Length: 479
Image (cartoon, rainbow, N blue to C red; front, side, top):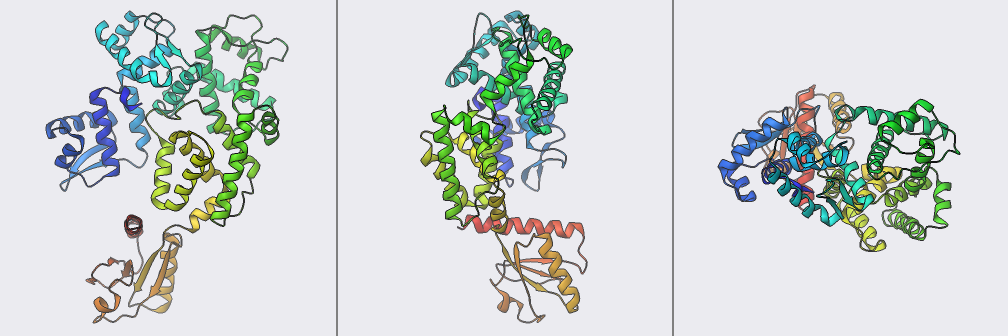
């Protein structure tokens, strides 16, 4: 959906994304990569810095660098870009606004009628790929109901990382409270993250139904909370005397989420497409376990439930700008290329015409929810060879050896080397990835040297971690 952004917003995001993955970049290189003059690059960076503060882009030691405070992440960048994009704000307004007309839009965003029409034309051109459009008469989103709700749900996830930043806090809070009561009544365990996802999903669903008046009603089920039921009915203008939020949630749950393996098995009896997917997931899991000699999942039923739920909810891209699952799989591929390639190949083999974003979502679930697979990944992280040269006593060297192994989480082999000042270059050349020593001034060709004091401080361990990352990344690029 990056093509929805204005030309300036698109350039700003391109600068940010390039610098995130290419830290040693200067203005001339960035200008060449993005086919934009240096003056425009500098102007764009000034605008970026004003938008994404306290994150900033600086020019230090001949290189551009993104500085992200420890209590922030790249997710904040994407949220800020979305919140400042006129195109996305127009879409949000057309979906959530109680009353809407061209005059409402002009007043809300301080733009002319011609600008609005030009923007809407562009929006419709981009969203047509997902069978979504802004109707020029009603100015509401029209098209595939699932695609519209999927887009808005993931727009909310990307643009508003926390509940506090949502504009309709009251509506969200009512839905969240109702889902909490419903979960208790149905004996469903739900954590805070899933509660938030469910609340956003149902909240968006009700707003969508609000404008086409098709929210289901049923007076035969008990009402969880009379006052809450009334408040939700009033908030979403539900035109029914027998509206029951309990039944609405139950119907949504049946369509969207499997809470138990037995519920999933019951659904498979009449859903042939899901049955095929379930069988394919079982085959893929078996193939991975066999190929990589990994124990079968001890939580197999739960893993299959989670995979089938993701497959069942696949109404389109699970992101608007911030493709977190894609980034996850990309980083996995950087560190575990063979496993990641095998996963992707398996999904593409057993699921015809599967989208890349669906492969990423399913790969994420498979990797993070399969406990034995996580253990395999941890055990097979790249190891580096370390030569330890200290002119201290044996007991101190043993202590230091243990500390280094702990800080690198055992992803290293450590060998003690004798202290012979005269033959270091010849004896140790290319023998180790890293030499750690307390002797200053040692230089060995093609070998990293780290001089640590007898009792390393936090900054020393951070330096060791950075060297480990540099060595392992270099090894991976040589494969």
